Length: 365
Image (cartoon, rainbow, N blue to C red; front, side, top):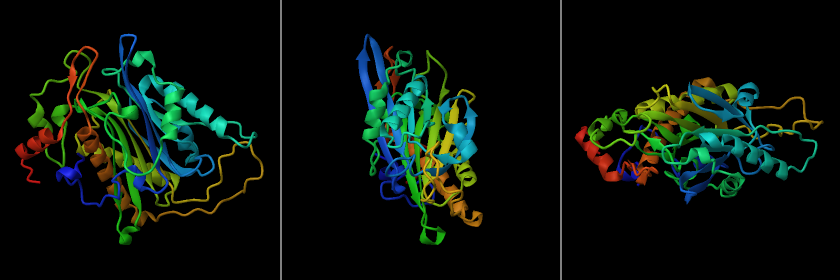
């Protein structure tokens, strides 16, 4: 069950229809999940893709921005977003050692979709977190077929969470982690915009876990840690994708991305040197940006764009922080028990365990 189904209401905002990043019109999410045993190795990994609009991202770019809370991680394509302020490709999330093959597969998919041979390059966005405790990460089991599958399966509506796609082998606050999502719909008076978040949660120490402000991690210390004999609690990362249909400019998208830090902090994360905490926000509110047909002549010299007045942007910031906070909790609640190849249990947080810890911490629902 998700947080709200358990009566856990995080923040003051109102979720969208699906309480997912796909509440932003046009945004689609797809997964390809690998759970297998190959040549005596345990494979628990995959790919998740986020399509920013209906249709090709190259032909309908979005303004975008990036924020890095802690840079112990890797990503491709972010420097061009920082420089140009536009997102022109799908976004993919996978494990640390599969960034290269996923990026190459996205390039190939872009090449195969091109109708204009004068277009000469693309720079896909691929983000990662480390799944080496549960997955044979050195085996590099993710291939182009997983990327194609995740792209083909991208759709709107409810988003599968937990041990799926890129989140298959992830651990969060020493429980099973993975993919989580949530959204907030602003009131008509605030503009009526939607903000959606998708996280790949693979970070945090158990004793620091907080839910709805309650220090539930302190009630869960007695559970054996999956890091007892390998690594250390808190190792790992979290990547966040934020989407909105508000008409934000690139610098405003960067400001929105910064607010992911608040949602992570509210759940007790964001303080580890070993965590790669990288966030990307894109805005679909400007619908007439020129296509990213690099090399093609004849594009207009200027384009009219819209901008949300900064005096009205604070509700978006609050929505982003709440959506990220709830997405992390949803990722934890979607977790399932999983064992490492050495037989060490990575436990699911579970509904009853979380509710029990909340009650012991003074929560009354």
